[in-house]
Image 1 (cartoon, rainbow, N blue to C red):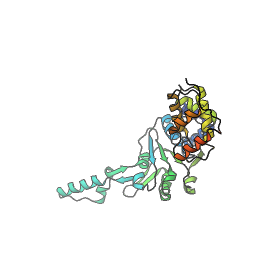
Image 2 (tube, helix red, strand yellow):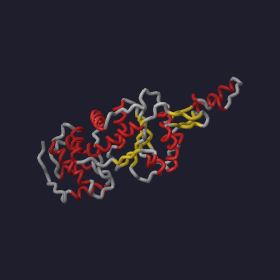
Image 3 (tube, one colour):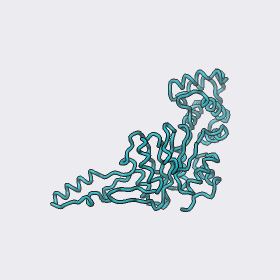
Image 4 (cartoon, rainbow, N blue to C red):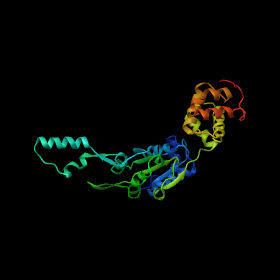
Length: 297
């Protein structure tokens, strides 16, 4: 497999072109994963851009993004493949009307197979391998991880009635986890690994400026500082990138030039996700030194 990137600098530059700003660590992890053809497990707090990393990678490579959203109770039929029972039933009835006989081979052929995300990624026609996003793998049951092992190790899926499908072009696989539970060692061993932390203040400023170029520089700086302080509080849902970008957009639309206490209180619907978090943030405003009012643009 030809490596799609010449180095980490190229990864960073090309992701920047599609609006995804990465640090050196994530750029290197994506470089290694795409060069070696290994799955990449991304972990981090909710809202740090794990899912967006896979979307941006697909955009940069000019290929399809195939997403498997994990949840409790996810089954093999929903993730790998299932049979089109309605079509099989129609085939049976049609054969009966013609007094014809059908065998198992007739009913369990490729024309009755419904591809779900993983098999779709294995059988992707190309010419560029797709990016398969296995999102929030920690939300699936322990048993589901075992279903992934053959695929992660061999880029293959076995359908007992048809045999084993092996990818001609192994997909670029990105798994994400919020660490709501521990993943099995067998799955971790098959993956490269990177922890995505909240961005540094400098990179946060660049991200916010990219997301809302019209926002005033003092507002971007004060939003960055406030969110940094908020993440040090005991919040149920610390604000991630998406919440911060939404909050900046709300403030900018309201004509806020620089944060003040009343601005924060009025706009917390975009930042706080629980009543307790709202109360905690409002209670911290005095300690954080925010005045009661500020000038308007």
